[in-house]
Image 1 (cartoon, rainbow, N blue to C red):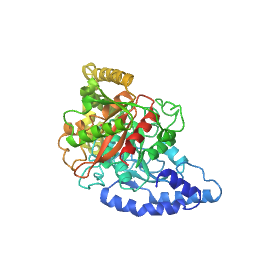
Image 2 (image 1 turned 90 degrees about the horizontal axis):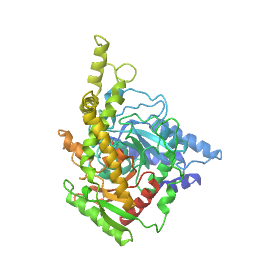
Image 3 (image 1 turned 45 degrees about the horizontal axis):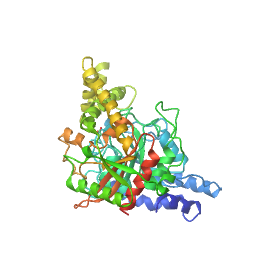
Length: 473
Ligand code: GLN
């Protein structure tokens, strides 16, 4: 059942919110045990919430596009009174003092939040393995990674523990785990979903977006969470209030471009063939397919791994043991308190990013690294503008491989970084992108196709995603 039908069932009184939640609870508990999908389960408050929604419905108010729908949120989003750990020891006991705008919108729409999902520490990672709370696992094969950094948010949807979830995407953290787990995951246009209450990793790249098991549900959640928010200075008004209609749009012809740089070296043969096959099938359904070029793709990973760590090093300066989170028990003096709290509170990957970022921003290196990366970013925007002068949508693989084994890449950060090659550019340029599952490989692991649309064309993106989804139904 999709979200719309489930909500109708609740509104018509055929099922109560509590009954629906009770169907999900055993799946959640079982999944948590097998897959470590949550850092904090909120089942008691979810039960209370479902019951209070039922009381509201009984009193005649059954408003809300997500009425009674069980959802989960990534543990880098504030939900007042709950822990927000960011997958880190440094925030292990941090209690959210307020609720993030996107999360508040879910609640206002009637959703029932069942838990806060596992994630790479501070969203830095591509596999979920940098979490202080141990890695989440892939429901398709628990020996494999679910992708990251929104590892738990992707896995819990793939495992049918919830009908939807929220993740954040700084360089691929929604689309890439969606591909690994075989679900839909969307990164909206930068600014469409408020970042207020999302713990900052790299502020100019971070964007919240939905996971769901189909495009329509993703569009529905996205419609709920999108919107201008004066509490986020980079927020922009989406200019439309219903993205679901795009999913039902018919007959709109699209010219779809496949960037040759996204189909070359490093890409698994099976994924290559599946994307090429998807393109052929789209062509047969009447869409025009075009070979295009995004020449600066080769600099994307390098530019991202300067910009993102630079912003992270500034954003994470606040964790010094004084105001937020972990403080080392008995420091000799104040300086020692800062140093040791950070040393003990942060994991290796976070420290690596802080060091890279601090280096890139330091006097004498700023122009050579940070400024140069920002210039590359500007040029990449031109690359995409040129491409979109010719095509409506870009189609590519989401990830160069399917889900790899736990532990396979943890010793080699560069290998890990390279798994983001196809998703990073969207963030550097602020474009909307989405992962749509396109079947499985010969080992039974999900393959994901990525679609990218021009800036502010999230509706068209969802339309295209629906067309790809149809092929594999
Ligand atoms: N894997 C990328 C990184 O480690 C992207 C993570 C993200 O999108 N949050 O930075």
